[in-house]
Image 1 (cartoon, rainbow, N blue to C red):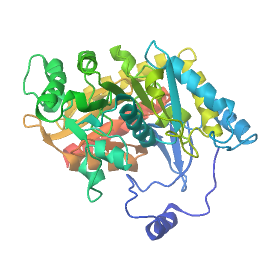
Image 2 (cartoon, rainbow, N blue to C red):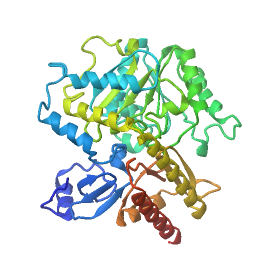
Image 3 (cartoon, helix red, strand yellow):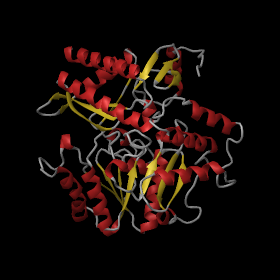
Image 4 (cartoon, rainbow, N blue to C red):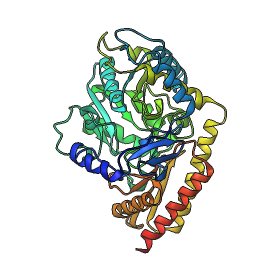
Length: 437
């Protein structure tokens, strides 16, 4: 649905400078007016192919008709009651459906919140309540949100500078980042990286004090690092050995992004809790914590909740999303998109010396840019230049990685073949221009 703005982008940017806090960052100066499928139109009428997907939120595309219809119908009936005051069917039905489709053949329960960061915070509370332990182990390159607990678990100074002190009893270990290996040239890379967990128990925190390990199946902000199944299976085994809970943060990897409904399905690992958000409700604020029933029931009555968590309109959007994604062909299309992205990015790696690595899982693909392949020297300025040139020519992209040198792709899974080819051409031209400069 289009929106006729009465102000130009330039006028709105002036107002943004005057009224919006400086700390709220922008990747590009785009001021959006409308979006549909994989396309976004700004207030000046310029169209873009969206390879950012609203930061991984538009897996089902912008404004999918079935979801919009569900939102409109619920909005006409009830916008809010607060689940703690007057329950409603949508909340209960959504938890039921999520319990059915998330990994794990065991009884599950869940709760709903508003954002991925809230899901993280609540999962930590639940893990501590269940285990009676306090310590949490997280990973280098992780991103778990911007709340104080989220920032404590997040591993990027850009988000943390000046905001401490952070939450205590948080311990960080290296992730299985093969391009920049934390274990050198080990022949058994994934096992060696998983074994660093036992090293944590010798050097930093006793296993009997650890409530949970929280891990992203694919590092999001950390640069789309995607280890193989052996890594996650061994991490899980180490956790089980010490009665430590495994929390899978699938806020970005969930809902078809990796070619399966959830990334942990690729690895046949059943986390004790799984965190969901972003594409769960196609753009409405909604997140979830789903886990083993006995774990989820550990907090006392009143220990979990929030005024807006599981809003009725967002719940109906999520139920429509699940139905859409379970329809025949959707996941196959998502997997095919991932293969197309990987193939073309590998071509770029052959064409352009600056593309040092291509990696990801499914339609969650990235390229790490370097100025020297042998030394793997990060090239953040080149990544900036590619992003800006793509923006000028109608392609929205975002970066990632602690060095700011990773170009990541999160296109809506409904992108057309024509849009995808056009996006590839814009990207190729941008690489060629930056390489020649």
